[in-house]
Length: 78
Length: 370
Image (cartoon, rainbow over all chains, first blue to last red; front, side):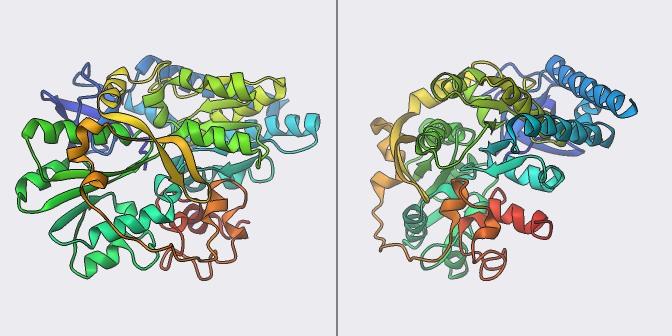
């Protein structure tokens, strides 16, 4: 099962990290994301961090949704 | 950052996005005289579309078809029976994902075997299997390696760890699946008419956006890589309709915050080191050449299929239509067993068991709305 909720890295060890997911903490492997830093958000699958969430792209996605929503709301008002 | 990530389930965004998708679909229907049809090829998409209500909200305007994305569901019956038979052996500890426990074998499930006294353990993190092996040197410890590209790299980590620690009593029963060969199979078979694919968010972390070019170049069909939250699903579907309206095919990455163009290169190195392509049998399809990955011969010591022999009989035939559900040919409710003989308390096929199964999603969230 793919879990879409990102986990925040709160402590970094050599090949693992402690992550916080909505208040719960657990240890995950970080061998696939060696560049990970404390404070990063990561996508975790079966106990391994697979990708670091890129904040710039995450923000762009939200902005894109808002543009769609604004366009929709404008059409509805007309 | 967290507040920004939470926006993907913000009703103030999601509700108008539903309206935007429906309006875009109306445009499509006006132009082509039919609803657009898309297939999601990730079991977690299937469950998310049902759980978030997106599929129900769009049911009059978008035909969302579940495809072969649930790893447990696509594993063929012989493989399931072989894994149950493996667990029946003496002096073994079987480690597995929870989804596998209740999948019906021809005669019994892994859960039945566990109740009968076999040592079968559910692990969240497969790498812990190596620790189990280290703590039980007098037992053979075998992990049931079922999964797509997101899970496959984790199997390589296990082998690396066992190798490093010199553990001899650990092995994996490999029965992995790859997305590209099965998409090619579906497109070559031409059994389902599609306007595009909702491409898997996490498999794409491994593969990367560029890996789907064959859809556009060879099959002239579109794909949008999409995440699992409500706004991500809706915007992915919106983009698929938008592309379909242009009459051209394109691959778009709607999940760029975690999916890159080339995929995770560290993971590629692990896969290249330990694994090689192999033929795999799929439920309802049969053998697709080079549709899975197996351990390279130099790692035979960790390959359970090379170390243990299991004997299985011809799988028991049932009226289960999971094979057709997986190929997108029928909806779960079109199976005569659905909701009657087959339900979550008494699953006949794997699609009713798995947390990613189409039948389980349909039963849990949609059976009253269709």
